[in-house]
Image 1: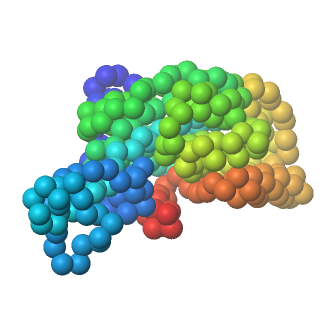
Image 2 (image 1 turned 180 degrees about the horizontal axis):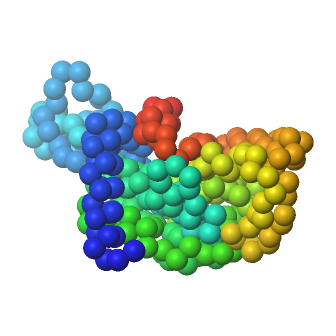
Length: 287
């Protein structure tokens, strides 16, 4: 894409996602993620109904009237968005490519976090980590993240989700909100999911196109694996072949869902062209 096209695309995504975020997601995000604890704010005179445990005995003794400590939520959190840029994400048969849909979801997550003054970072990965955008605050930073996702060179290689999670855990020691956006077409080590879910709050977001799950009857066709380059001729007119393919895809998704459930993490299956904001809203409510 030309620079002017990138700027236009980023602006379009900002307009769409900010509208959704401000309408529904931001409030649910704040309620779902409470922060890391409580911190001291100020001391004020005791009022009827205040907890006795909050009394500041030193100031009470000095002024000979009760004072209480006011605590407030330590709100600031760090959100890390991990986006798969393997070649299978550069595909789509609906109104958007999977990569464009991932950019829009990342924007909604980012603006929700920015509305609570939280930091947001980005990791782009395929067979290895290709780019790390350190966590920062603010609208301009979120727009930069959208641009990085849209302009990334999508890699013809098998994605290494487990290696990326290990890399992220090596850098970010403090518990963070981790959103993993991928089509999960490649294998991974489920043990790494369990470790990552214990250290961080992990949500997997499987972004898929309807044609990922089934192939129509178009006769003999040469199928090309965008990540490995492997090519194979198949007879898509065979009902048995189409059924076997569809069942294999369903089994892969079932195993993915089981792995996330066994890791105490959550997984959302999101088809391009659908309204992802409802799924995110429900996820935030559950938290």
